[in-house]
Length: 476
Image 1: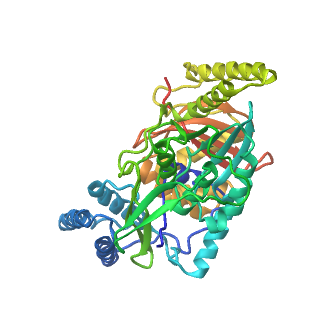
Image 2: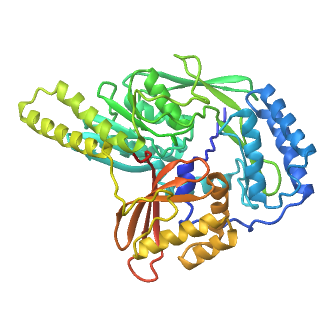
């Protein structure tokens, strides 16, 4: 059975907004007419009827789109990105399915299974290190894995084995999925295998087109060294944790193999497959659903509820503290007792400081729109980026990227994000230097809070070198 997973989490969208190295689409966005709009809608409806996991919902979506066509809701839309985003919103209004999406590809869409497309996927995944962002040993011999995507295990297994082998000798493990938008269910099972000693039933996936169910189990033998099935495991989640990352969390929670710490996740349990519906448009159709062998249901629409619910920004310290206490409870070495006690006190102090009110009148703005950024290369660049994005004009964003050493075609992605977010509001400065700045921002449409970090090169003209984001809790 072939199960593909496409995902569009806000965190991943933001992470590529202003990266200089993004490849351009094959063609820039071009105006569309009534003929193209009709072709896209008809083909999309056809693919939904053939593949969508709930046939009755596919009928409801068609009825809603037909009614909008009769009201001429789409007649004035000529921008293909806006059309794709609008169609996605209207389909989701009915289905409530966050996996369902229509995307404008500009002729640069997937080959949908061809050999060249698969090789391109492998190359792109390798640039992301197959989702393995950071592997670290924290104080008290606590393992930490910052993991941001479940890539195809055929390509990712070597990197996964190296990461998990590094963590195998730690006394407890924290797996950070706060910026993980999902991926391949086979990779979910592969990584999970390092956390169990015996073959364990994780999840089932029912596929509507073939009317069949596939079971996913851990493997007893995997490359490298296992962490094992006895030591404590903690999984960090945020509202941006989605799809396969939710499955990983849900599986481990119900098997009582891990403690979930953070925020309720996004709520997407339907694997999705891409279908080309025109030369420039692709629709991702959820064609299957997860069935947990313990609960007999899944997390669709409700998300995974953490065992310990805290703001995503506080979850790592909370998990580190819980891990240290778990290790301390089992420690029999008097030489380590004092060290563990000291670490627990230090982490508790840091966590208490995070929970305390922060900020001052100098760095916070009541509206978020009038925050004065520092007169540094990083501060000036961030101010220019936010101003350009908030215009909602593609030409303004193209000029921004051109002026800051980036690819002007990145503006296509920026406009898609602008449609989703409504722009950004600056709230407060978290830290700042000549070449680096981190601020707390809020999206205007959904009012989501984000820690936004921008780095620039030290040498003039100070082009953007990196943008990093993390989910953030609302300020007190």
